[in-house]
Length: 206
Image 1 (cartoon, rainbow, N blue to C red):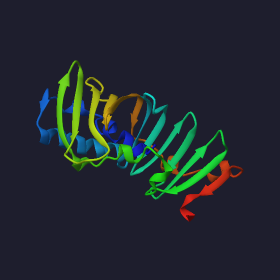
Image 2: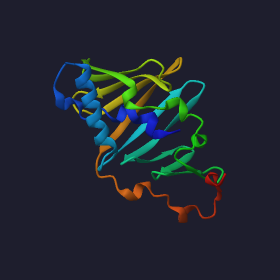
Image 3: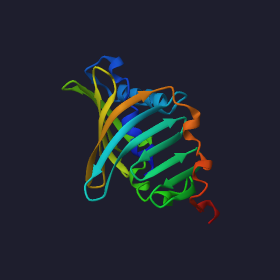
Image 4: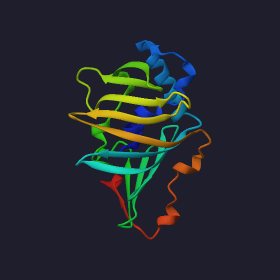
């Protein structure tokens, strides 16, 4: 799955408790979102453990890292590195390496379903039962994610879950082990020597 798009909503919300308000205007909610965007995908990056279950469609859990537009994830079947322009996915059970450009949506059949652009949403935020909640609602005609609700622990400022709606179905992503900063650049470099004996398919040659 295109992890950057899929988890974009939840990761922007770290540290929301610093604002100290109970309700927020649309402008305040958007400003908070933008600040957390830079926190997650900026110079320091972040990592977290996720668990998601879209009943009948997709179920997985794993660990993901983000930094400066790059990412890496590990789940029960795959390991994938987004190095900015190149996306490399390892299927451990099949001992296979697939290489794509980042603009090639064929690398993941779910990628287009979870497309996300911040300017395509209307923002609001509130405090509810010890959590901060940021709600994003898609503007008319926007494809991909239609609505997102980010739930943040008020005491720690860390994300606890994300509720997203795509077309007619919704799902909740559970978040644990969140850590911001101190992410090495080496995390996002595909270690080619470790998979030298795997079958390699370079889809960029098509």
